[in-house]
Length: 166
Image 1 (cartoon, rainbow, N blue to C red):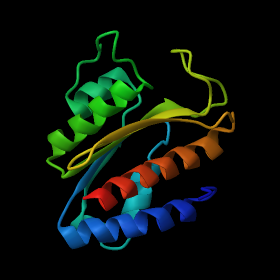
Image 2: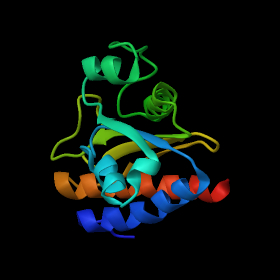
Image 3: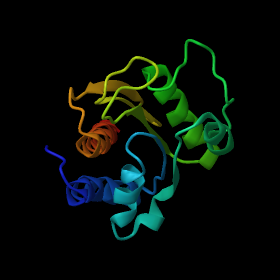
Image 4: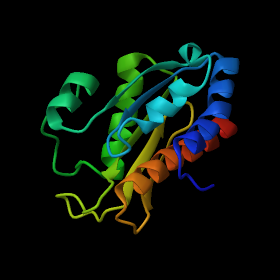
């Protein structure tokens, strides 16, 4: 699906919210380069209080410590905007907030890459919970806002796929 507007994200979040509410499951979100769009779309769905426990834009080391309880400095093998980091954040936010599912997104929206050498349009998305996954998306686009929508849409696609497996 193409994600070019906030409404596209809400449309992707609605069936996810319905499944979570029906199952009595909850979700917590840690996002960075999507800038809060994942949480906002989940919250835009009526009845979100039945499944959404909380979320945060984890954009810096100090926030990572305060929100996720992770050290400001991580081992070299776990750097921001990587699959291991996304998986760590998904597990941490789920555990910290006591959620059934944890969703994490971390990347470089653009217009330039990040200090780790990732190009604009790079993100990693991880799901923690009854089913787990982690993946990398490369849009090869430097349009910051377009990437933010795509990153959030990718997160919803990954979560929907994990929900379908349970």
